[in-house]
Image (cartoon, rainbow, N blue to C red; front, side, top):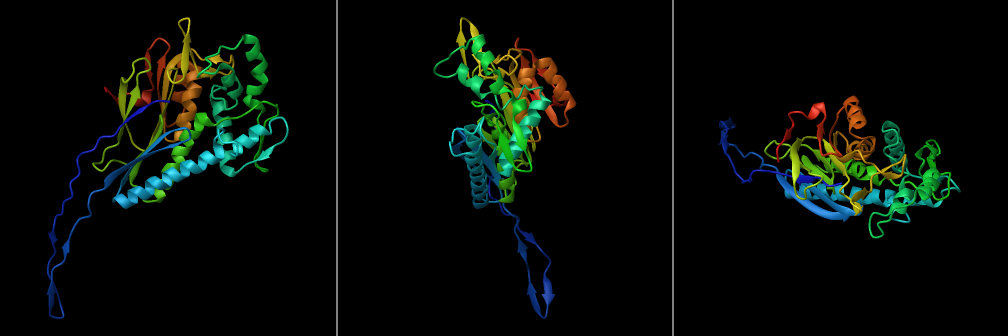
Length: 349
């Protein structure tokens, strides 16, 4: 998911304004107290690689030390969640769930259980457009080195392994069970947004006044820049490199984009991309990109993929029904569709 961040701020200069209070007379002592205003907040920024992508954190804080501590708190939280959730790590909780597919339920921590439950709810909301069990079909295609197009028969055989409705969750026992050998779940389509939400909570606890957490194109903002402005985010054009279709000012919001330009290959003039329609197990064809703006990163991250699969008409109908959710949907012809709550908020790049 690729979204550009554009953070603007005025140059900050330290200043001191003396204020003279009236002289206080007590017990033959006379003195004046001079008060100096607190220095303006400053901006601190750092980047590290986590969850298989570049994580960039920008913090607005009262001083550099507070800003550095807040950034470290955010990075530490993302790293901790990666250890729980990443299927690239054989020792993660979700990797253990996948390893026991068709055999045993696996007990997991509350956070892993919560995210899988939210993923199932997102699948229900998008009529299965968002699907954490689609991994076996993704592997059959391979959108990297092999660039393979699987046969219809092969995809049909994979159908039972990508059926998210068969995932069994026991909230009381805190277990997850995949009933078919070869099934696996992967929360990569919602996990980065969730991690950004959690990082923001830890950064606030560490004293941050505002900032941005960006895990590649999954972005979560909070607070304001020192001059009282929100954070400008650019929305990438799906067919023109380095071009933007619009810019939006975000305040305490998250943004995420799913596009057919992220991982794809072309064969005989046809673009085969990684966003599969779980009904056909072939690339969804109704959109070029979907950008979702929501209050939570997990919501924006999960919905963009689900809406992409639903297509521009059904996708926008869903957006208009949901509170605090807006979207920009670019259909397969390149037509830009904007939800009602975004009209007047978008600017030219």
